[in-house]
Image (cartoon, rainbow, N blue to C red):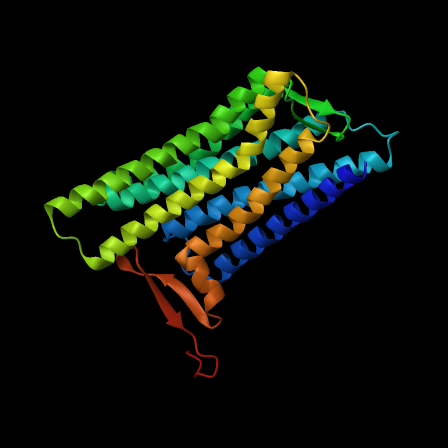
Length: 307
C-alpha cells in the first residue's frame, strides 16, 4: 500500500513537472519568437510541446482521480468519463510520437530535398500537421468504441489492459513502432545522403555541422521515445509468458510514461536552437531570417525607445 502511494506521488510530481515545463516553454515561445508562424521548425516544436502538455495534464488528472478513489472507495470511478479521459490521454501520447516523426521528416525534406518546392510549401506543411493529429484521433477512437479501455479497481482508472494482448500489442505497434520506424528510416536516409554528397562534391563546413546536428537530434528523439515504451513492452512480454501480472504494473507504466515526458520536455528545449536561445539570453528576441536561418536581435533595455 505504501509502495503504491509512493508510485502515485512520483507520477503526480512528474506529470505536474512536465505540464509546467511544457506550458512555460510554449508561453516563452509565443512571447519571444516573432514572427512565429513563418518559422516552421519552431511551429513543429510547439506542436510537439502541445502533445506533451496534453498528455502530462491528462495523466495528472487521471492519477488525481485514482487517488480520490482511494480516499473515498465508496465512490465508483467506473463510468464513461473514465474511458473518455483515457481516450484523450492516449490521443495525446500517440500524437507525441507522430509529432516527433513529423519533425524528423521535416528535417529530412530540409536537408535531402531542399529544392523540392512542393515539400517545402506552406500548404504541405499545414496538411502534414493536420494528418498527424487526425491519425491518432481516429485510430484511438476505435479502442474507445470497442470499450477496450478497461476499468482497473487497483488504480481507479481506465487503461488498455495488459490482459487484452491483442489490443495492447496492436496499440504498441502503432503508437510506438510506426513512428520509431519512420524516424529510423529518416536517420538512415540522412546518413546516406551525407556520405554520398561527401563522395561527389566538397561540403562546406557549416553544412557538415548542420547535418551532423540534425542526425544527433533524431537519434536523441528515437532513444527517448524508445525508453518511454520499454517498460510497457517488458511487462506485456512477462504476462504473455507467465500469465501473471504484478499489482503495480499500471503504476510502472504510468511512471515510465511521466518520467519520459519530463525528459522529453527538457530535451526538446535543449536540442532546439531557438528555444535554447530564449533561456540563454534574457534581453534578446529571436526572429526568423531568410533561408531558414535565425537572426537574434538584441533589445537593449537602456536604449532609446523607437517611435
